[in-house]
Each structure stands twice: as structure tokens, then as C-alpha cells.
Length: 342
Image 1 (cartoon, rainbow, N blue to C red):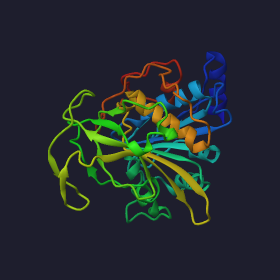
Image 2 (spheres, rainbow, N blue to C red):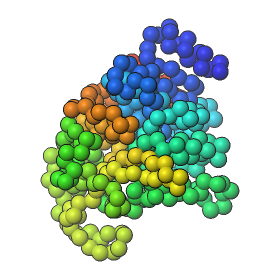
Image 3 (cartoon, one colour):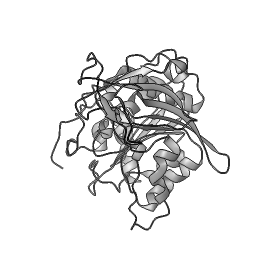
Image 4 (cartoon, rainbow, N blue to C red):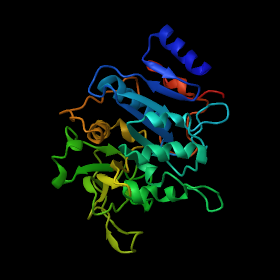
């Protein structure tokens, strides 16, 4: 309570549109179509720098579209952001107020006291947007006593796919997004073009009920203008060989997930989503559009996805995260430090 009061004091003194606790940050809504809706973004992966990319998206949704947004982080016992702490999610109680979730998680095994808040939000039927490694968001070991081990299959059962393999060459072959022709008029793709990610295509086989939106063309290099790769590769799923781009793997899709009681979540999944991928205007617009779609709001003709603050993301990789960063470093108007001592 003291930290929340302190955060409001900072808000008044600095005149910024930000409220924060010691280990989470919230961006109050500006005027816009998202008025009254609260988007909670869950950061927690060791590799793809969600702790940098999700605050950037949260600022856009708040400042450009009128949503209240809150970003929760994986932190250490000092409240410093620590993507490697698989058992941490700061301030999970705020999920009770979430109208939608954007998540980029990898192999988390949160305590039951934390997981119960995610479980309750999910079972309420709120829309969920899963980025990149969220296909394998949870990993509860067999010797762990928990009522949430079934979430190890959250990717397959809810988002539409689990981890299968790196289909493109990791850190060697980037991804060009190709709009699925049959979905070109889908509202999630409104105003979307030139989707690119310097992360590789994942091998993925969404279920038949998924609507494929974007396919991933494996490139012969790491730049948007590089030509398509051309070679054969065996699929891990069945051992059969195919041309790397014939057919292309899906990298974005939507679907509905229905619970036993009939409650339904609207789901958008993309296997893109590294912080460096989010430099793609087309990818940012697709994610913002999916928020509107999930909440039943009219999707803009060309959603404004310009950065609120400068965005210079760290290249993805294990053990490459910026040291000593706290939630407050993501305050609107601040320059994110390269690293600092804890």
C-alpha cells in the first residue's frame, strides 16, 4: 500500500501517465476507443526480451488507443527484473481486473498462489494474445506438487500449438510474413503489411479450427530484403521431408477456446514476438488489431503503432538481458539504461 501511495505521488510530481509499484508498471489510459478496458501484459522469458518489448506495446496501447495497461515482470528478491526466474510474476492479483491478456512467457512454473490468478482470469473467458514462446509458456516438473500441471499443455490445448522445433535456422534465417490469401480481409490484418521478424520460423501445426492469418517465409539471411531460403528439411512432427518453404509454416492464427461450462476465450497466437521482431510496424499493428478483435471493438483502418518512447531492443539470446533494470525504468519519457548494478 505504501508503494502504491508513493507511485501516485510520483505520478503527480512528474506529471507522467504512469503508476508503478516496486516490480510492476501501469500506464493510465489516454482518450481513445479502449476507454474502460484494462490490458495486462505478462513478461517472463529467458531469451526473447519480453521485458523490453511488452512495455513498449503497453505504452502504445495506452497512449495511442486509450487502454489502461499493466506490465507484470519476472523479478528477483530485490524487485529487479530477472527473466531467468521461472517462478516469479510480480503483482499477479491485478489479473482479477484484466479485460485481456498479452503474454510472452517461456517455461514458467509459478507457485500455485500466483498461478491461481492466471487460472481464474483464463476461466473468465477473457481474450488471450500469445507471443512467440508462449506456445510453451508453462513447465511444471513431475515432482512438483501442484494442481496446475495441466497448464504444461496450455500451448497445444489453448493457443493452438506447443513447442515443436526451430524450422528456420536460429539466428541465421529471418522470417518474412506472408498474408494467407483466404484471410486477407480478416480484421486482425486490417492495415497490416510488411511483417518481418529476425527471429526464425517455428515448426507449427495449429488445429483445424484455427484461422491461419500469416505464413512464415524462411529467408536466406537476417535482413528483410533477403531472398527466400531453398533447401529440404525433415519435419520433426512426422519425419517427412519437404522444401523449407513449400508449404510455409503458419506464424499467426486466431481461434476460439471453449471451456466445459461454455465460457469462450478469443485467442490470437503468433510465433513471432521477440523484442527485435516488434520493430516491424506490421507485426505491431497485427498485435494491436488483435486486442481490438478480442474485445469486440471496431478495428481501425490503420492502427497507430508509432513508438511512444525510443525503442532500441536488445538482440535475443540467453543471458543477454539488461542487468539491474526495474519496472520504474519503463516509465513514459525515460530512456531505458543499457544495464546497471543491482
